[in-house]
Each structure stands twice: as structure tokens, then as C-alpha cells.
Image (cartoon, rainbow, N blue to C red; front, side):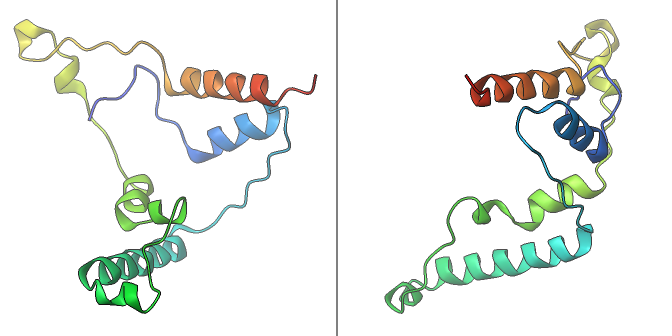
Length: 124
């Protein structure tokens, strides 16, 4: 995994950005990760059950749709405690790396996304 040149962001950084600078009202409900992870396992189990046993479709059971279908363990676990070290990729080609240099930081990227959001939701 390759990251950007800036420091790692915490969820609170993103929440603060959205609540302070969005033209729309933003409300963030902080939820502990364990209940969310347990729910994601239940969703994954249901999805696997329905896809592996097509006869359940005849009983009216079907796969969950967007956005709930994305709430699965791989998504949740990847955001709970992932640390990324991309120092090998940042080495020069002569040193065995790719010489990667990020174009912008995560915070700059989030600011751009929020600016787009604000433009789309601006009251005219």
C-alpha cells in the first residue's frame, strides 16, 4: 500500500473538517468499532448464506443492496488499526524502490472533496 506525503489522519480530523467547513449541516455519531465489526460479520454471514444457497431466493431472501452491502468485515477491520509503512516504495530506483512521491496529502484531498461537496450543495 502506498500513502501520501503527509501525516496519517485520524477520523477526528475528517469529522472536524466536515463539521466546521461544510455548507450543509454535518452530524457525526461516534460509534465504538466492536459493535460495528460484529454487525459487519452478521451482514457478511447473511450475504454468504444467500449467495451459496440460491433456493433461499425462492423464499424471498436476496442479497442486501447498497450501501449496507459494503458494511463487511474487510472494510471495517481495515480502518480500525491499519498502519502503513511505504518507505520501501519511496526509495529511489537505484536503492530498489519506485521513487514514489505523493502529489498531495490526505488532508488536501479531503479539502478538495469537501470543496466539491460545498459547490454541489451551495444555495443559489
